Length: 551
Image (cartoon, rainbow, N blue to C red; front, top):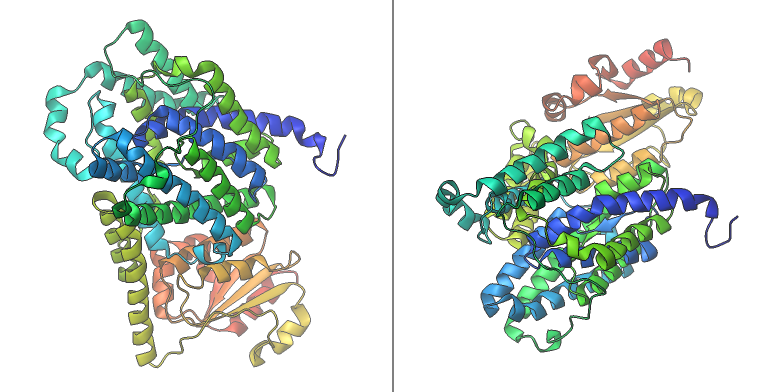
């Protein structure tokens, strides 16, 4: 049974996917709510509103949305800043709610003016440094709750307060925290049918309840439908407008990046194509509605989306069911959540935070271009111990300045600095004509001009995706690529991995010294592209294909 609105053959998969994604989201929503400083209920409100409305109005059919680590860290920084200005959480709420609401509205505007086309140009070191910094912030701010103690609201103050950790820690709370981490990490080896985060939450909370241990708990949280939280938002002091504007912009940009990255993952899993602008509009609507009920903002959640798809979710109904499940929990089980120990929530957040840290980017710090490594480290440190807003702005500025410096050096060395172009729509180069005429249906040749850097990596990946399905081999001519940065390295790596999955053989020709050194330093050569698939000139690649492939 089907209609023009919904094909009911997807109902079973959507129902299963949505319910499983909702079960996974529940403990994380509570934990992120506590982390934000607004309480567990704010995380649940956010997960419900963003989960339902981003699914209905968004542009990714299988996206499961809700509070995420990066969005929660920015929210927590906002709450701390607003409390510092006003003196109390109650007095700070109008500032917080107005910022969340403006952030959602900005996302809607982003979708309407096609800002999604520009989000993809963020340099890899800036995104990597920011995400790793966010992971470190979560870990540092959860150290004290993990052992049953109140925590300072900034990472720098937490580090200064560390001596108290060893003299006042609550061993019972720490035991529950350790138990939670162990169950979270070990349970997937037993079965993946039940989310380990939920199992860890339930087992540790039940153990704490029956042992009657004296540990800090969430405490009473409201049950039933939330009320509007719009009181006072239109009478906030004008001196806070800059703070509101800054944090709203960061939430909108970060939420957009987070969601669009998850959309790309969903596309790869489902072989579909999301609508980026509609996705931002949907996320903006969800975040705006979450704001007016006092919920924290969210974004596309990678883990929830992957679980939704793997459990059978195929349409936006699955995402809506994920949010409706959380609403049912709010209406029926809110009282039980009050007994969850804060150290258990910390035990869930700490391993999740380690997953946010970009281990790949950090591992390659010593081998990627020094300018990229410098930008990554600066953004990481400023994010972790300074201002999230300044970290992103400083990272973008440094990345652009350092690239312009490098481009100037290349020009002075007499090398051509151009843009990236593709073979499609061009005439073949003179030394390719004969081979092209004979094998154009089986072999694709990609010409690259100028440095492969963050400004062109998205275009490069889009060009690679356009390669026809029937193509058996791709030759990438790098004669005119004098320089490759970290973004370019990873873009090339991802392109080769995607092509290999399609059974396309990738060959490189005439690689200059700097690009080849960097490809070798992060093991793209020879681990991903063997030495026998690298040639000094195009004729060597042609000879290899004619002798080794059935063209």
